[in-house]
Image 1 (cartoon, rainbow, N blue to C red):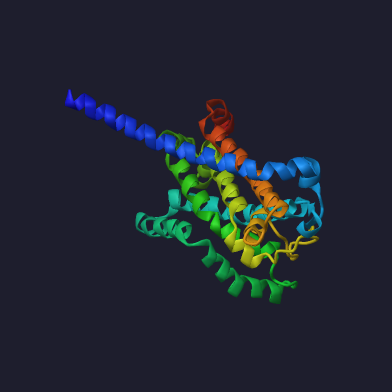
Image 2 (tube, rainbow, N blue to C red):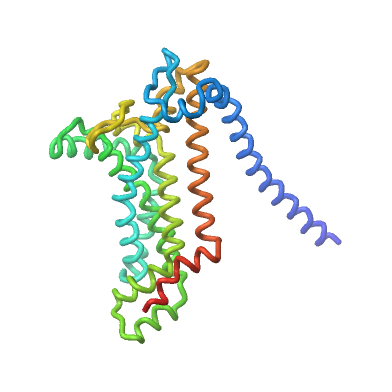
Length: 295
């Protein structure tokens, strides 16, 4: 009797804890929507999202330049971070000796624990002067932000991609080697296609990490509200705009910042939902891993 009561109590406690997490998310969502929707209704969705001018003192709330800034910096981070991350995961899973892997894995995990302000400070001291001296421009630019974010998303991409590769059945590799493929051909033609669903999910989660980053990019982007013409131009992202102006905003200005948060919230939720779909949908996983049948 006591054992059944104990199990029932434990189940209820875990249910309450899970419900509290969902409730916190729901409260945050409702709060952001209540604070941000009035200005969107007043300005209009199209004008708010595609407006070219952000001047709260004059009642202009257009976030399109910051959307472009977020997209360009995130794209640059993906171009820099994804190839490096996938190559590192392949190296750790297939080539690195166990002693080396035991050193590299904690070091990579340590990257995820470094505060973002430290990345920003490092970029301000080393990356910004290097870009300014060797490539021109002010140094505070899309390229600098992309380099910093590319490094910051590495732990996510490496860890999830490596786990996806290690989780493959041994028969995949053994069968390919038995057919006469080299080690590299086995990795390229069999293992990477078979692990593609996990790798794609890692990339999407890395993109979500890059989109939501604030402190590091505040320090290295230059924060100019304008459409960039090159990767050496300064920009302002959606997150940096909220971080810079929320401290002194009030009235419609504050509502516009919350509305910017709604746009970010929706974008990150879509990215995370797509990552969950890729990893959990059996048909999608089968489609993505069908490349191994071409051998």
